[in-house]
Amino acid sequence: MIAGLESITSGAVSIDGHQVNQVAPKDRNIAMVFQSYALFPHLTVAQNIAFGLKVRKVPAADIERRVRATARVLELESLLDRLPRALSGGQRQRVALRAGPGCANRPCSCWTRPLSNLDARLRQSMRIELARLHRQLGATMIYVTHDQVEAMTLGQRIVVFDRGRIQQIDTPLRLYQQPANRFVAGFLGSPAMNFLPGRLDPDGASLDVGAQVLQLDGAAAAGAPRGGATQRDVVLGVRPEHVLLADSAAPVGPSLSATLGGDRADRSRASPGVSLWPP
Image (cartoon, rainbow, N blue to C red; front, side):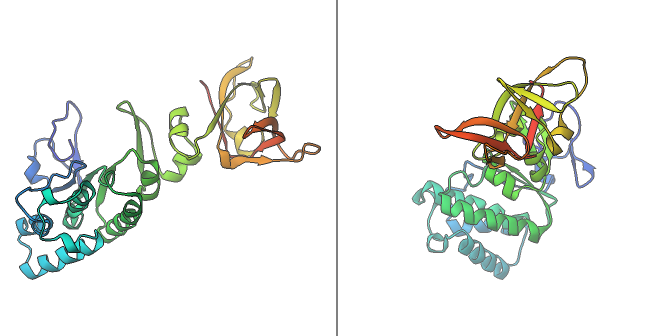
């Protein structure tokens, strides 16, 4: 819809401050990188990489230099004379990333899961390259991914969707530390956040978890919902890195008896990195 390939049903799309609802896709100046390769089958790797540059009438010497530089980054230098049918899936995806250098002088580029067909090693190196490319171009890059690591490492502002509806829009750190709801909290983080049902006192100072009472302090108490004359059902969310083993004789701060990894632990303590939501 941003590129104009699909029509919007309502509202407006603005690029660089200008509404483009009625602007044809070819006139929106949007670079696209697809998951499904979208290569010209009759052109070699070098010609596919150079195509966008030729369309914009970049000088031939500059095109050759940029094609060589792109091929070096994408580890395609030995494949420049091959046609797409002679490449593996991962190699085709790397050629499809050719649109990256073509993002210059464009207000926006759209990337649809461009690293999904690459192996883990190359995916990691390409994340670094994409971040460098974004800093170099200084242009908006809209990047679609199901990989939370890619989102958290590449994104400066993340939109979390669930079944077509926006759940939260924020910076990576705020999404992780202050998730708006249980879906966002459970989606971000590896290992995933632990969820425990509980009943919160009206004053927000303590939480009944099973047969135990968890006293809340610090950020947990400050973020706890308050109000009403009776206890309310909530969900306690604790990230694994915020669980600390404590001395059972003298636990420090809020503590619960718990079983970790199949072995009985006297106490585990949740640091202020906990979250509370109404169910």
